[in-house]
Image (cartoon, rainbow, N blue to C red; front, side):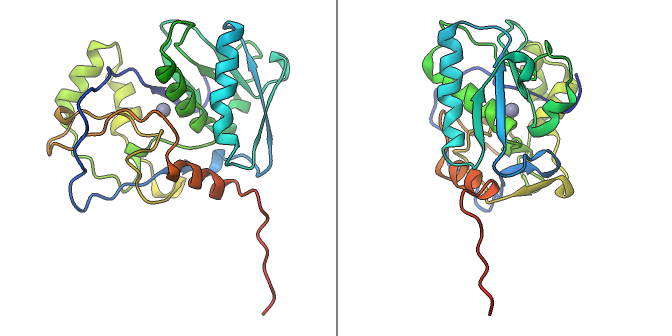
Length: 238
Ligand SMILES: [Zn+2]
């Protein structure tokens, strides 16, 4: 696999409502600038597996991002696809970020895997597709912002992820690692962002927690619109 692999959404549901973040905590939504698409790009999506119903749900949910970003999603034959989606059980949810999909040249090699099926609850199906397509647009994990201040209880986090089959290196890459300022641009933190993992309070040393986010937040939509503006910027001479 070439490029940045992001493993997502393997954590159990959190039922308790999350408390507000600690005062003064500043977090940011990130994008990977080198992997962003040219504004107005048509992103071609194909499927390697999955039922017709599953494919239709992916397109339906993913399309929500494209209502706000000046990018276009089209469904194509797998041999023509930029984004190749598989539904391989046991492989988790992951996606290459932005244009990294072009580095994966094998036409039968997925650039995204969704561990979903026809029986997956609609809420889980939707949030997973939205999160992974956020990566397709070049967006990164909110909890890994370079200005992120989560005080991780590392032993508790590592113990949890080991139980569900993650290697410690996966946890470092997808949970603990903070992005460099040079590789990301960001806006203000949005605890409702679809790009944020759920964080139970016992994962942190100060009680900070976040529940599952199931839909695009207002800031997600605004961020997509600013990253890929639909209206050309007009500059008037002085
Ligand atoms: Zn992710």
